[in-house]
Amino acid sequence: AADSAPPRRGSLPEPRAEPAPRPERASQGPRRTRPQRRMRNAIKKILIANRGEISCRVSKTARRLGIKTVAVYSEADRHAKHVDFADEAVCVGPTLSAKSYLNVPNIMQAIRDTGAQAVHPGYGFLSENASFAQTCEDEGIEFIGPGPHAINAMGDKIQSKLIARDAKVHTIPGFIGILDTPEDILRVANEIGYPVMIKASAGGGGKGM
Image (cartoon, rainbow, N blue to C red; front, side, top):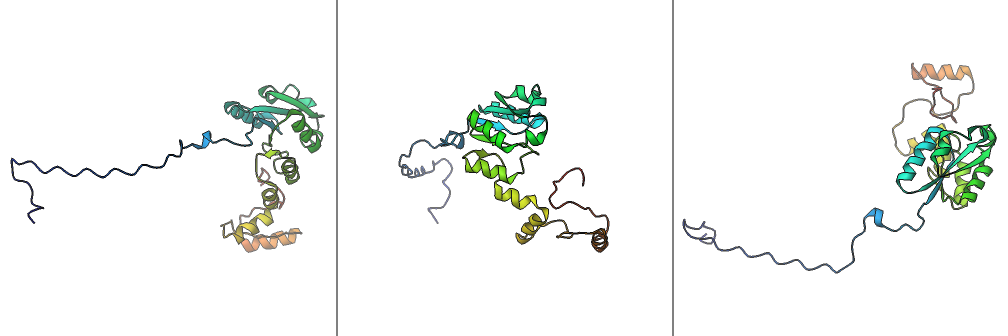
C-alpha cells in the first residue's frame, strides 16, 4: 500500500523506468508499394478494338498511365475522332461492322503488326465474344475484360441465373427456363403476377427491356 500511495506535496515522484528498446528487425530492404513492384509483363501498348467515345476514353486513360494506344477504324471512320486520339491507327476493313470491327482475323493481325501486348474491347462489338477472348489468350495477348469462361457463363441469361442460384446469390424472382410459345409466356406471367419483363436469354441488358 505504501508503494502505491501518491507522493507528498513538495516531493518529486520517482522517475519512471524507460521501456526496454525493441529488438531491431533484420534488414530486409525497403518495402515496395504496389506501383513500385516490377511487373514482368508490363503493358506498354494497347489496341482498342472499338470506336467512338469509348475508344477516346481508353486512349485518354492510357496516355495518363504512359501507355501507347492503337486505334482501329473502318474505311468510313478514317477521319473519326477516336483515330486522332490514339498514337497509331490501323484500318481493319470496309464500312460494314461485320467486315471491320467484328472481323476477328483482321483485328488479330492489327495486334500482331503493331506489337500491342493487350487489347481493350470497349463495350459492344467483341467485348462479349468468348472466342475472341480465347484467341487473345492463346496468342499471349492480354484481354482487358472477363475471361472466356466468364463470358460464356454470363452470356446465357438462363445459365447465369442458375449459376447465381447455386451460389446462393439473390436474384429477381421469375421463371428460369425457355418459353417457346405466347401461351407459355401468358401462363407464366399470370403465375408470377404483373408487371413482368420478358427478355431474350442470349440478349444483353439493353434498351429493348
